[in-house]
Length: 216
Picture 1 (tube, rainbow, N blue to C red):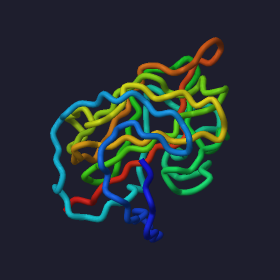
Picture 2 (cartoon, helix red, strand yellow):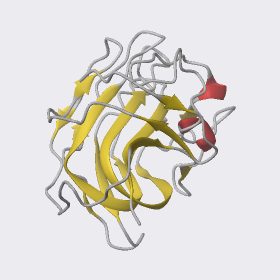
Picture 3 (cartoon, rainbow, N blue to C red):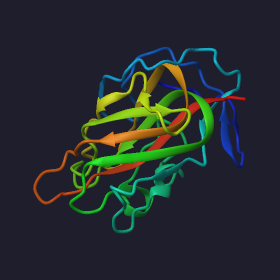
């Protein structure tokens, strides 16, 4: 799905943009990349819950005590826009360690947590998979879940069960519609494995964005 930014306003807490409303179709791709297999649940939600403007949620905090981080990568790089050719879902992501996240060696299974800072009505998830080592470090199988209270998690509607491999740098994104939208503050990526073969023993992601509407 192609989004056409009409207005971009820089802000401290959120990057405010006007987009065409999502019209379905999980697993569409940006920047020429491959998408993933859809398969998320139907755990509640519904359109029209919040009246705010559709925006990219910024100041997202990622963490994972189990997966950890390796080398020169960092959790903060997952949502700061570093490594992108443009601050847009159609931008391409590079393969520099300083602009992405990778788990500890020998650890390729675990939960990656995203704290959005407050409750939003979530409409879309945009993922740039790692293209390091011809895509072998990229995440393969996973599930995505969401929670309003950071305690009870349900499947994220329209979320994928697999992310496509990215074999060339810079790489494109995969865009997943949350259909119907769901309220949530916390999102989990429950990573099962990577595209790794041979000596590649960990997993990584380039960037993860969430689009939604602010709730009272």
